[in-house]
Amino acid sequence: MEPHPGYPPGRVATVLGVLKRSLEVTGLTPVMLRALQIMHRRGYVRAVNYHATPLRHGERLRTHFEFFQKHFSSVSHSDLAEFLVDGRWEKKKPGLIVSFDDGLRSNFEVAVPLLEEFGLTGWFFPPTDFVSCPVDEQADFAERHWIDVDPEAPRGERIAMTWKEIQVLADRHVVGCHTQSHCRLSDALSDDRMEHEIVDAKTTLEDGSGQSIDVFCWVGGEESSYSSRAAACIRRAGYRFSFMTNSAPILSGTDPLQLQRINVDSRWSADWVAFQVCGILDALYTRKRQLVVRTTRS
Ligand SMILES: [Zn+2]
Image (cartoon, rainbow, N blue to C red; front, side, top):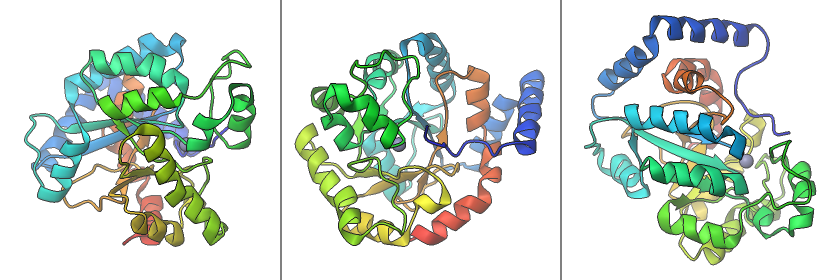
């Protein structure tokens, strides 16, 4: 399955686990969030990304969204545009972009009703070939293209969203491009393939969703899955925003093509999710983030 760039293995993960438990015991997570708010007086936006959200995790997901609603404001496409262009953040709480990668059916059926119950905007990034894939081939497609599906989902049933569901999401939430085939955009790709995965994918998603698409989301997250050629292609294709996964708050001066997210999981406790967004991981990702920003900067 897709190696998400969460925690490094071994000792670092252990140290983070201890740190997280200490924050829980001392109740420091809300204090960390308040400190971030004071540090970024003109406002900041945090972005998280989920993958599969199966029904059996629904109650967990509800506790995540309760936490989000308590500590953050929802972020629409226009909220993000105004913040990045004009530096305006007039909501009382910081913003939180709740995003979902890979166009999974469980996102539409489980996460969307909860998002709407809590008044949150979801940002959805479906690979277009996965959505167009015949139902009986979707499990194989997911396996061949590193799409992390629910291991307990019955084989043979639909895994991907339908185009009809994507049209609903494009009307009520935000839909962005995640390439055609869930392709890591490394330097090893030919120019034609790069064009196909970035430019043609935009057209396919616009045709399928019925809306213009100006948000892109990189696939993978490892350093090698970013390249300067792909970044140039994303700019040429006319994308206005692009999302990565190297944990950092989005500030008014942030490059709109280098918006960082942190991976979260519907299995996790709300405390663990709170730990992910309290700012400590930003420091852990500094080196990787600098490398990726250097590779992809405008
Ligand atoms: Zn993905």
